Amino acid sequence: MTDSTNTPSSNWARYAPRSVAPLLLDLFGIVTFILVGAGQHSISEGAGWFFMVLWPLATGWYLVAIATRLYAATDRMWTRLVITWVAGTLVASVLRGSFTDRPMFSIFTVIFMAWMVLIAFGWRGIARVLALRKQRRRRTKKN
Image 1 (cartoon, one colour):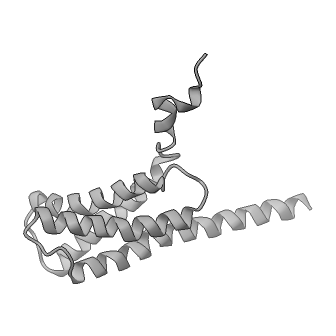
Image 2 (cartoon, one colour):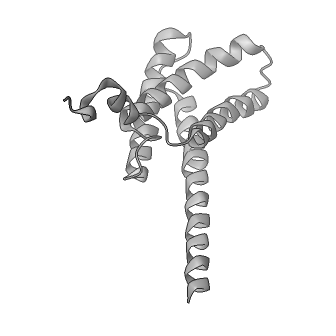
């Protein structure tokens, strides 16, 4: 009999997202950052430009998110998010500087970090507050 806790499929399950919603909400943050930036700078270079900006940001964010198990684990969510935010931005910046004609680190990096704090931490904070309110209402109904 083999130990099923060490099979490749069980190891992969540790990294599989519990829900696709957090993953998509973070992607929404990255996409809106690009679209708002394009609007602010009057950039209308089409889909090619959009994906050239998107791929390093999304790749950096999600590589680190997978490594930290941001979307798979339920414990230490805020710690995992901070690590993803900082390290994901660093990886994205290195990819951006290495594979595009853009600088590795610039004000773009700072603004991206600020934007992702608002989006990634913001929606999670709102969700947490709503969950706590719902929990309190249930407790008061039982008493």
